[in-house]
Length: 102
Length: 306
Image: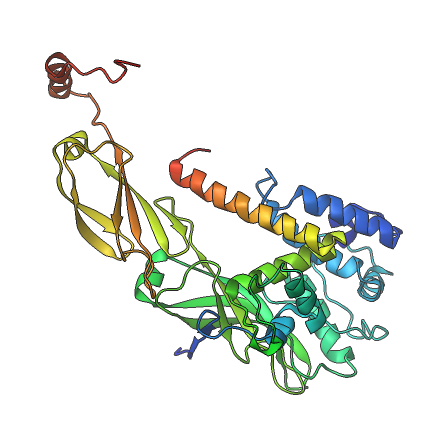
């Protein structure tokens, strides 16, 4: 059976707008705005919200933040800390794996 | 499909309060968090917990789920069909529900229910998220890969159902782990058009390589004489075989950098080859003799001066 081969677009080529990120996370845009304002998402954000662009890493981060905030009723700073620490653990583990240390 | 006992998954009684369910979920989801848990099945367990809490943590879904069990004594794993009129009294939607991480039990139940009950479907369908695992080499050359996902679609009666769909996806050259591939219009149906499907790129675990952004680290086994005398060696890399020059007098652990030989892109990453000595076994008389000759004639003590 021949099947249609689909082509997607990498977010690195076409980043998400504020509305698109909110839709992708199934949240209101106010949630995204609050997290950009506190610097948890999008470290260097332009003043004009219409110029905000979110990459793959931002989308992954936003979804993980949401999960922690919802699972534990965590405030946004604590959720950000958890996500940052988890990233660090993953990075170190990957280094250990290559070094053959377990 | 098999009946799933969500109360059993969370280890709570059927009479548990909202608060008890929340506490039980939090405790277990911490225990099985894939980044900290030592349990082998942590990933799978986390998905089960999320699915169970997705239902029992939501008053309306819980009520609908309880209705299923009433009058029947379903056990976990038992063959199960939901009654045709099930869910009539529950008008919730399934926003943010499926897309790879849920069991058939959950998808069938709540997808059908959502499609039938939803009074006012959202303007635009929800986006779906899933992951696609590719080999590192796919990123170097580009590839077409198929992925099977449980994705919602509309059936002939205009209901939303989940169906396993096999999609063939173009993997663009130069993708790296964590990047998101957005497939417009492949998400959930909606009044004003479907949502999108986001596929997160993951690499198949391969202990030869470590990937950091676009840089690739590869451990290369070498012989003692290749290190000591130097010379050209052939190395299989994700982009194919390359010939590299080992500088004479290299030690094990030396790192050779091949600029631009990492994951393609603008700029491309670098490939780091970590030379790691492998000693031949002294498992024959001749091999032993060679080692003995070295021991006698080289006067080498790596601990001297230590």
